[in-house]
Length: 158
Image (cartoon, rainbow, N blue to C red; front, side, top):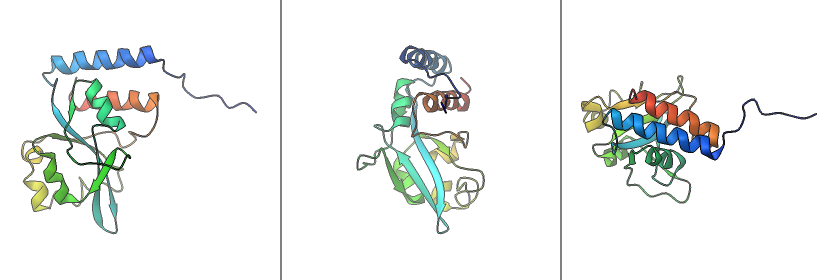
């Protein structure tokens, strides 16, 4: 039996075009160079776990190709992310927070809003915390990149 992919694979040219179009749209919204931190959030043993993607991660590279700046300062051990608790979010500085969390385990909707540290973050105070589609996957290939591009543009209404 031959298994065929459900989607046609993207070519490098199509991906390059999507990045170029995204850069143009973000620039038109005055978001070029915006500082972002991309987070995958979940709960372990009742505590929020925040997977902070570094600039060398796939979402960090996608952000960079779109003209955004992944500003997470934390180091990783080659995985492209660092996992922190809520106090670790203070390292995000004034960056916008873009996060992915599944609907039935979303610390940004449950545990974090009542947290004093979280409430004082510049992105929270200035309402610059943006939920990406829960199905956004940062560990895939071109189709995952396509979805991430679309989500980054959606949150900035570009």
